[in-house]
Image (cartoon, rainbow, N blue to C red; front, top):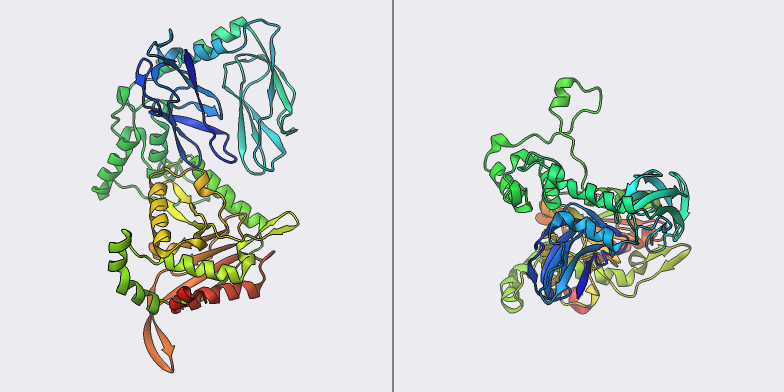
Length: 507
């Protein structure tokens, strides 16, 4: 008996992933829930476990391939009997065999896939194939664009693209027909042959085509500004793996002379000498998503920022007095984030519109606080969500923040952990920021920016004293939050931090 291994659900608005690494090869024995491969999306890394125990018969989607949700990744022969197609290069042949028969009368419609929550139509941006082209199963046919994401449409079967019904620039509805693939015995046989021949053309070592290196390694190299010939690969045939890039980055850090300048190139006319010293690196999919979402926030919301400052003397004194006892009892350090989270939760109860969102012509008030905590990672900014933060103790908040931060740095956050936030806190102070205007995290209506604590002279009861001060910034959507509400929120946060006993008294 053979069991199929398919791409799991990747999360809201995520329709495809790249096969980063296979941990098993055809013929290997696997146990139930043992990790088979790792997929990468523009937001998270997804591990695919084995659904059954048995032998990995064949791999249908090799490393570097782009796959859609529920696409076939591999087959597992239960009971230890491997299938007759153990070679990885023959994987596409298995996909073609699973497709409809080569009868020329067989025609399969190419349909618009599900586009995501509240998205009903898309625009055909690019066709990768033209009428008469041979296609393999799961090969990308075209790309659609919506107001939220780009969606690639794979071929549902192997054959020949016989008809394109929606040309580039056309608007199509969810579930609409894009084209038709006609079955062809010659096409079904030739498409896998072309795919199988591709790996043979790849040179060994690290100086070959990008497809030979692990996608996670290529992403890490792009972020570190390294080329493949600067990294010593430890994988099969010299393949560069993610850990190889980490070693190369560490080695470069110990040799300052080897570091390259990251200064932006001038945007005017560029001489040939200057062009030779420039480096063009494709944005990672996560960075593209971050850029798009930030710009969407500016285009949609009426963002305004109000500022205040807080004297951190009392909060710092309370933390210093109890931090050792706190850590001994709860097993986690007492930081400032739990104070700020608690203060925001109290302020949000008094000014609920800051915790609300706009849905069409409705305002949706949230009677709970799912606190987003912005975290910088080597891959980019992510915002894990601490659910029901208003119901949590200081210790529970600190534990949740520490755990989410660790998972964010390791790239192990799931889509579910980054969805549903009602308000966000961003701490630029850890990087030394003295003042900033944070951008909203849609569809939220408010975000609090924390900054560096700096000793400044302040007038206290007619006397000048040195106090540890922090600037606070609240960016809010002026469509739903008025100036009075925004200022009131920030004043309540200031009051709670300057007299932390108010948090205990629920004042």
